Image (spheres, rainbow over the protein chains, first blue to last red):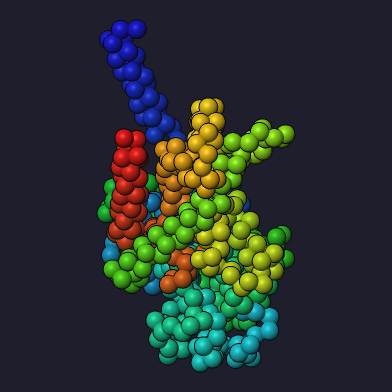
Length: 279
Length: 218
């Protein structure tokens, strides 16, 4: 084959690929959703998204990262919508103008978990804040995710609310910088206390042997919101698709399904629907 | 808020080097004699054994990591050692990842020797220790290839190291797991700083070994 013919063939190939790409952009609509691993790991999205795609024709690409990274993707316009659980950081993002809608979708409670023997008596402490104080005072084994995730942000807040320095270390205090699953396993091996989201805690309960030390403690409330990345700030984002996604999450039947999610696998619900409120 | 400090950088880099070099030395100490023995001797079942080793070359590190991590768990086979999420567990996984590579490449190098080579050396009438030394000299190119392959594999390993070490700060955090962590945190500047070091290490080591290899050829 002569060089010219190869060139012509390549040209034909690339132009047809371009045409196909353009056609795809016109026909199919997509939504890039950045969310946290703790949401992804529960399987909630797998349960909700097929119905959404069926109803709207919008394909959702889910990127599961830490809350820090998800919020940053939103700030830089690298995602169309976010589903996160760090209210303070979310509100800051809203103020910065990088996102222009924030709707509270659901909530649950973090769990302060520990070995069944509960060596420092966190169960009896009465609240998560008192529990943290006891752990810190006894310099008991404690595993921190230390990864700037939503869960870790809450842990830092909890230390602050208890009047403690979140940066204080002690020999049995371990920082994993890893996801919830691995951190729970580390805590299980070290028989340490750890703050976890409820979904991950239940999923790893059997393997880690850890037990919940807390219940529906107000200071452990964990609110999940969906955020729309602002098309005014980032013109290329798919804002219309994000709106449809938010509307879908707010629908009563979706809210009902969120409220029932987890019953099958864990025998208990993972989320309380919030009906959609917020800015 | 958890940005990388230069002291962390140094600590993580030194730990990465010490873990990988320890694993490499152990894997060489075990793998080279096995490779030489298998490469020189004919015995029934040799072909099947070589097949197993070659398939070990393709053993997914994530599977090695899974098994080794479980072994070191509290209730695992080696739980009594109390080495869960430790440097020792990481080294164990890396040795198992590097070992098949080294054995297979040493076998290849030994098998490539002339058939007469062994006879010639025998006629010299020197001790077994000297014969081994001559053999190692003769297969030095293959040995270097084995070292480069093994080091490249374990230095860039993420999954197995995460499973066995857990990325614990000040204990088991290495370059690859730290890069993954900072990426997940959205702290890309820190991730890039660590990535630059990792790439720099790989290039330096590979360059060094290649240089030695060319020197060895002359």
